[in-house]
Length: 504
Image 1 (cartoon, rainbow, N blue to C red):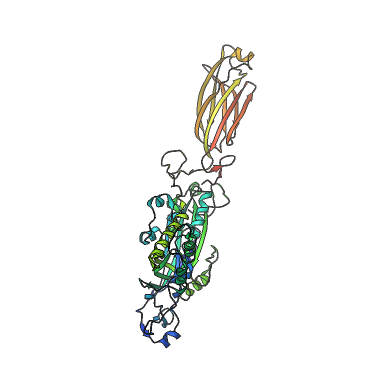
Image 2: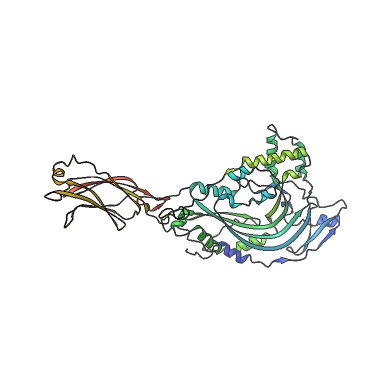
């Protein structure tokens, strides 16, 4: 592992070690005049919007009324915001609890499949009825998110493992009423929504979901988050001497493995990245290994207090807000159908090759480049000149990887070979040499075996290339025809099986 000097998030973490600000909130009942003048608490409009668990994105439309702040007594709740000079700010009537405190934390996780990039636990409390057989065979929910799309594109090209590294800053917490008032626009949509869900009305229900999402927020934490999804080529990492657990360990210690491939010089490198920034003043999370971005980081962190975004939440299904029971059942069915329609067949599980094949790691990736399986056929020999009296005792010596293997092929009468060179029978002796180092040459030797001294008749060297090839070794003492088949190990290609081949 080659450390690169701690990556961008180390500097961010150093900057984000803020003093945890937590003070006892001072709230009071304000008069209408006071309430009209006061500003809303930061991010109040975020909590009333819908959420789509397929795209994992907040919708722009409000399902809950967060504009109303006066109660029937023409008063409101005003709370001192310790993060903004203790200014008194008003709460929407739909908010029953609010708090302000600042804390930043980091989180790192690793996954083998794209679907594990988001949390499935939202389904455990979602109130939706998704058949178990669908969950067992398909990815349901989150399949439209940018992170899922990025990861899915990667595994179509090669085998990857994934890790997420995030820095999250929490500033404000909202808890909404168990029975929150609906927004005016959502009420209008329900007024024109057909009362029954069926084939003829499913488009209207789908439009409702596309506008308002599948869920709404019950509890929301606002602040900012910088998340980086890292995809690492599984087999290329193995070729560079790195196992998936080692890659994860290094990233958890904030040490990056080398971004380049030293084993096969693969041009696309070991890692790819996808960054997402939530909240703040629009910083895109750009970074450089050689250049500090501490000013941009600090400005982004400071801006989160004024421009927070949803960073964590507890969800409830949208249909629970629908007062009409027939429409409620229809919205519930429409959401379940939407999830089924957007489900994606699960990615295959990582293979397991523990102790099964030479040069194969536990994850079925080659441990070394320039490796392959070799089989050799000694097709025939002719005009073999050996013993002057008697017979020529032909045998072949093949050497690969400094290992000598003797094959006693056949004994042929000298006279017959001398005069019948075109009529000799084919030898066609096949030999499986198994795993070989493809950077070395195959050496063929043909000998005449004698009681006292063996005579070398033919000697030649041949560098191998993948596929099935035939060549002839010639000398003044005879000829031998050789055929071989070289198959590169998985994920290897090139003239000597020395190049990396991306393979899903």
